[in-house]
Length: 323
Image (tube, rainbow, N blue to C red; front, side):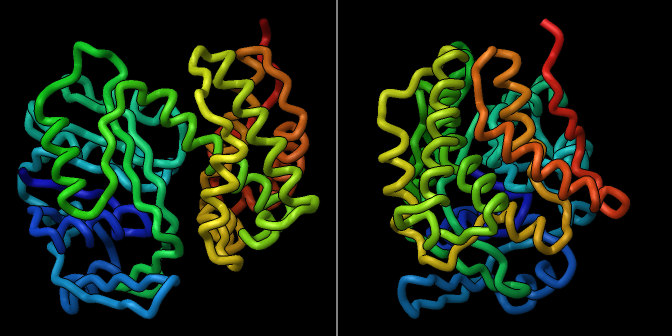
């Protein structure tokens, strides 16, 4: 099968590297110096847990020059970039093409499905910590590399999804075709949203959360608020998500930060709307108290509004909805 990965950063770059290394037909959509370096020198993956560095050839293109017809499209861009890829997907996709978003923001698949009628858009999420170190070089912070994906309606399930799972696993990626993808996506959200929100609120690194103290306490409190929200939404967790997420956190190097933190600190567009403000909106909708999220959202809203003249963060309105 032909795979297209839109986005060649810490998510798409790692996935594309492993799939290309396993001999899968995969192409990365990248841009600027990152694209030029991949095309000329190959893609390099470095890992923080050892000195292993490897460079391999990986097919790469920009959206303008990509002419193929992929069987599977993995969407690995940030949430604020989605509007810029729909026209491209419609141009290059076949009627049978499957689109798998593996973004940080919960509910992305359903929103994309509305924009791509006639195609199958699944839900999905990924566990990986990595970033672009320099053009053509991806730095992976932790060993975990796991993708959950699946359909929201059972009647949408098809045999091709099982082949995708096999291709992931052939590529040293822990691919899981989920029967409960909305719950599994919320489980991932219960980590990435609290760690991003608390990290940005306290300007904290993984090391701050790995030890007892204010940062760890806030992180755990926000996880519990997501747990309560998931239950109200009808997707109760079957695990102790505080323990699960603390275990994930323990595998990261102390200096690690989230992509949202790095984006905000660099005055770039960020996913703060989908990872923080959206939680407050959802909590109001389902009438779930989230005082920690309210506190964090109010502070971040005030700080980021100062940057609104140069960066648009989307709808940051978090007032309580009318019942």
